[in-house]
Length: 265
Image (cartoon, rainbow, N blue to C red; front, top):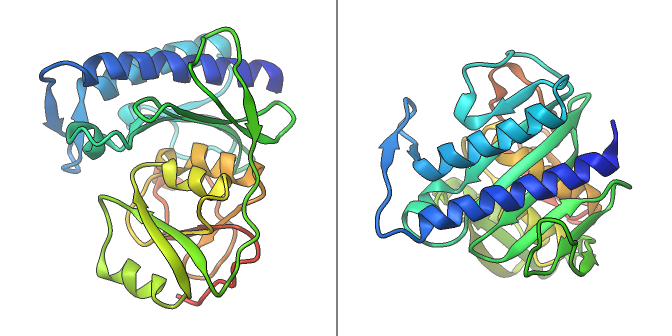
């Protein structure tokens, strides 16, 4: 894989998709419908998916491509592939809360090793570099000229005063019960894959997710987190988290900075 080219293509497509999403976000009204699983989808999801898919297929025609909006059209088991969630946090988008992201990742042998997470309404852009490190780029964002980059590194956690981030739209009693096993200094809520990025930047130490997700929801954020020195494991047994599973459905998981003393499920 040409990682320099991959980095440039991911960044360019994420920014272009973000621009298109924000055009629709700024409109007085936009269409929202329910998919077969009752989750919402908007014209922004579909427009961003079409834009990113076309760009990736042109740039990397030999790689399998998995996207949320085309989930029924690809192979059911792959280990090295591109995976896209064009608009993660559709509920946040519909409710105009701003916590939504564009996500593009490259998975190799079941591990997401490169990715980009762009939160256009928040003005935050996180991605992996060609050398495998992770950065946050400061805006305003130019499609060609890269702005100021800040290297990302997870925190050195204090297990007597942990910073925890949890889902804004999918918080439940089971999650709260698990978080209660830790000594928590502060807890914040965030939508979409931004939660991975908050751990990657050191703004949080721990992100547990006890709820349904799909691989396209997590791959890009997981890639950024791993590149920043973080980890992601299965909730039930703390085993390594892998991608390319049949149906692309995730188990519950924990994303964290090494040094957090993980509690049993």
